[in-house]
Length: 84
Figure 1 (cartoon, rainbow, N blue to C red):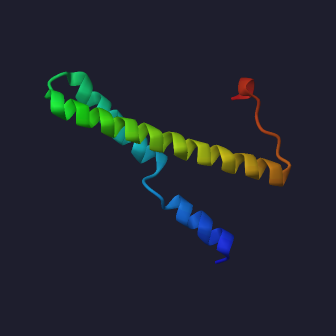
Figure 2 (cartoon, helix red, strand yellow):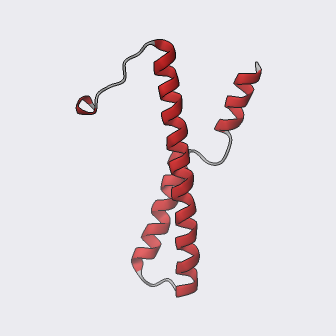
């Protein structure tokens, strides 16, 4: 494995996948929406949710940068918003 491939592999292994982050965030939101969580626990869960959002945003930014790199390297034109 070359150095760039190793670097990419290690990036992929940093933290859980996007889908896992989203699932965990959905669980936190469901619990908070029930309204029967004590205040201290609610605060902790809110903080956990905020961290999950931040991680998911970082993951999306990484994926977007990778897509832009692929598009630039392969001369592939990105889809316009109205074609999605």
